[in-house]
Image (cartoon, rainbow, N blue to C red; front, top):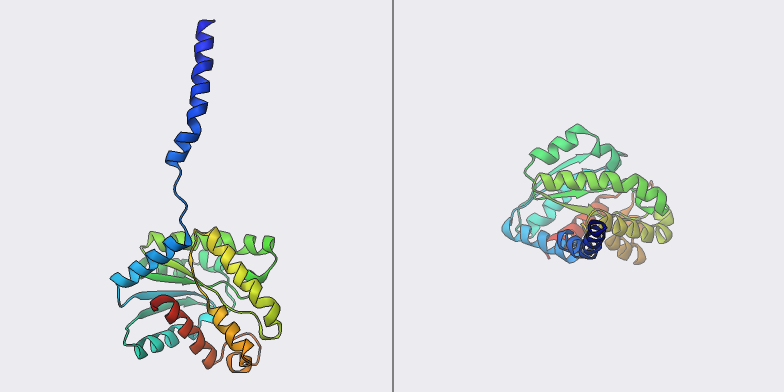
Length: 228
């Protein structure tokens, strides 16, 4: 009987200690501010950083445009890309050439860009399609010693007012789901220009893809987010 009583007392004591033990062992939550500081420190230590773009046709013209904008400010960048028309992050996450490029490129930053419609989908569809491959690619990026960031794209021209806020919210939610990744708010820069009446300068005839001016605006948004 005495043994049973002692056993019960021990179990009660262990239960009381469990929250304290869990509190000690649980990893601290990484905030967005922490992610921003990590990125700033990397850029401070590597003034000529290497950047890889992983995405689709919305990223086709951005690497060259960003390199040009950086050169205009006296900065040299090494930029690469793994971009295929119409591709989702899910396709990249299972595409060995993309994974090899992330693993072997000695990048400082890997830019992850989802297919344009997915971040604006209803939450359940968006989360199912976007979050698992995003986490997988972010983990691959970190394992390779680089920092993953998100390229927040824009809404379609003819649905811009309703779609652009959903795209923004989608990327913000995805950032939190993947450990508070830094977001490059390109869609916000596009919103300012569209609101000013310059949408036709940014969109190609399909109302989706960027013109040369659109790529330039995107590159400026990247430069400002990374280096200013």
